[in-house]
Length: 158
Image (tube, rainbow, N blue to C red):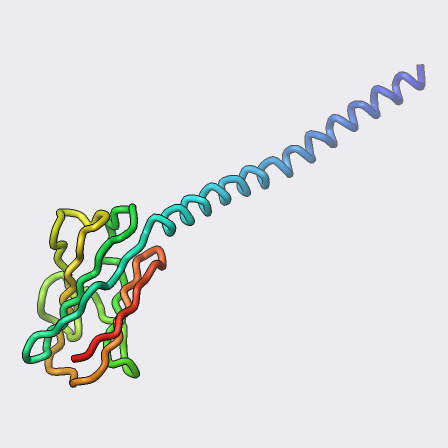
């Protein structure tokens, strides 16, 4: 009888220990799998996002620079306002803030989608960088970065 009680208590203790282990390990496994799914979605988005700065030009008085950026990825880019634009002479460039309407502080940039209503694959974004005065002649550097970190760089002369 003593062996039976001891065996039953050992089985109960084993089951309770297994429940504790399961309750502590299962949430970690669940969080880990959710993190892996989230990371896979981010990698997939980055792989589908690609851009190419195809051309740059300036106005005669050099107070505006036009950049044409083509979406060569398979993903539609919806958050253009959240993109970062760096522009300036190659040894003195800066982050240019996005401004939806002209006016306010300079330099600033705005955009138009030229051959579509959304920035889908093969659509071109025309970016207008506005300066308050002529920033000077020289070689200029520009870098356009999407919110997910994908970017393209371009050098041009003004």
